[in-house]
Image 1 (tube, rainbow, N blue to C red):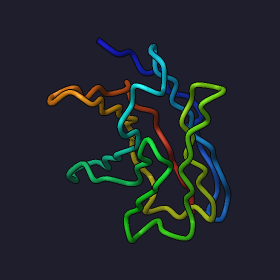
Image 2: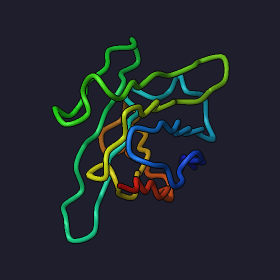
Image 3: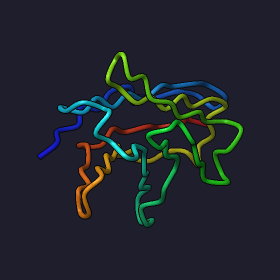
Image 4: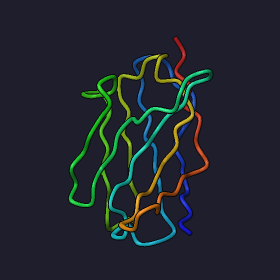
Length: 117
C-alpha cells in the first residue's frame, strides 16, 4: 500500500498561481507514472497531467501551456505548478501513483483548488 501526502491547494484569484505537491510513502523510483486528476462538482474526474518514470509529461488540452508537472527524485515528490489559473480550474485535485505491477494505482486524499473571478 502506498500513501500519498498532498499539499498546496487553496484559494487564488484569476491569473494567480499555485503549486501542488505529492509525496509518496515509498521511493518515487517505484512509480511508473505520477500525476493529477481533478473533479469539479457535478463533473467527471478528468486527467490533468502525468509524468512518467523517464520524465515524459502529458497534459489535458485545457491546461497545456499553463500547468507544468515534474518529479523531483531527490525530494521524492511530484509537483504540479499551476499558472494563469481561471475559475474553470476550480476542483478537487487528486494525486495518483501508478506502480509497475498491474493494478498498483494509489490515490491521494485530494486537495481543493478554488479560483475566484
